[in-house]
Amino acid sequence: MGSDLFAVAAEDRLRSAAPLAERLRPKSLAAVVGQDHLLGPGRPLQALVDADRLSSVILWGPPGTGKTTIAGLVAAASSKELVSMSAVSASVKDVRAAVAEAEQRLGQRDQGTILFLDEVHRFNKAQQDALLPHVESGLMVLIGATTENPYFEVNPPLLSRSTLFRLEPLGEAAIRTLVDRGLHTEGARAEPEAVDHLVTRAGGDGRQALQGLEVAVSLAARRAVPPVVQLADVEQSLGTKALRYGRDEHYDVTSAFIKSIRGSDVDAGLYWLARMLEAGEDPRFIARRLVILASEDIGMADPMGLLIADGAARAVEYVGLPEAQLNLAHAVTFLATAPKSNSVLRGLEAARSDVRHHDGNEVPLHLRDTSYPGAKTLGHGEGYTYPHDDPAGDSTQEYRPASLAGRRYYYPSPHGFEALMGLDAGSEAGPERVESAESASEGRRDDEPVEGPRAGRPDKEWR
Image 1 (cartoon, helix red, strand yellow):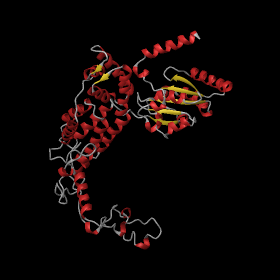
Image 2 (tube, helix red, strand yellow):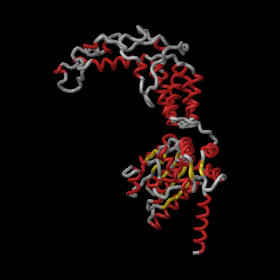
Image 3 (cartoon, one colour):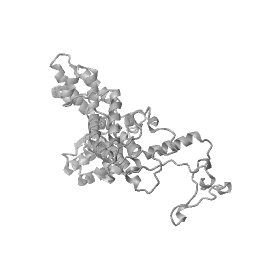
Image 4 (tube, rainbow, N blue to C red):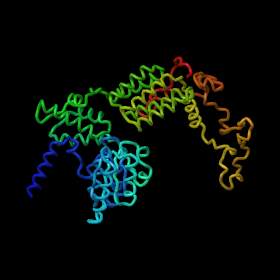
């Protein structure tokens, strides 16, 4: 009895001395924040836990999103015994010992085993193969946690026997909830701008937010008790100075960013990119703007621009910050130095104008679907010429309603790839242009193009 009391006292002291993130580790799945797509009512992982029918799972997500916490809580809600192991230090011998204990536990107490394997991607092929037959037989339920793409790092046989759950970076609301809990636990308050900076700088990592808060509270406690955390405390704890960035400035900086790239000023583009990143701008927003710009302001003058921008956007999702800054800078450099053309924007707007102002244009009979019985009896497809039957791979026929026959929307610019296409550029603005590009861009915010087409600047030499 005495030894139990000493053990409890030791545990309490360790808990009080533990980092804030450890002290705030949720005691129930309901207290986990930011993963409602998995743990909300009726969601897949929650449903498996409620039914105590959990099979092997892989929890994949960035650091600080709750993988270890969820694994422990899932095991606690189960009738099975939890065995934890780190793939960083565990060996094949450790795996075999865990398997032997699981067999003994099942035989003596009729109790199953959950093996929580942290950093599962660090297990080599031999270690994963040693685990596979026991996961397959159901002797052990594996809960693996990884920050790496399991399709690359986990053996296919083991992955195929596990359910993959993707944990998302914590949103701002979830980070604020954690910060509020941390302040309550520490008996402290914080100024709103201090909390804002902490939330912005967390990057979706709950552990990082709580570590920064813990240091900031310690700094604030030097001034007064109870401590009141100020912006300077958070800046010092994170080692970063807050760059104040209001809603209006968000749009002003975004506008300057887009105009600099459109104007082929690569240095200005990189400056505004750095400004946005330092202010904590969502990198996905920056990536979306670059993808839009690639078609709006470069288009067919350099068709690779869209691929580069899309690649940067994918890198933001796959790699994340801080490394994805390089991918964004790569895209900015490419797009700023690319030849410019707004022919895609102008063509689309001219076509949309015809759609708006010419009603009742039915699809010509020769272009209509002929895949269902009776279509030909309705005249569908009659007179259609299959282009591949022509020696030149082309056929002269009308592809639009008769009232719009001959209408032209696409006018290639004399820049870059478009200059090599051999098409008649015609009027630079295009006679069918009925609405200025600047007016078409008015009122656009966030995911929509901020500015209209480029007014004109000598393009760089076609790459």
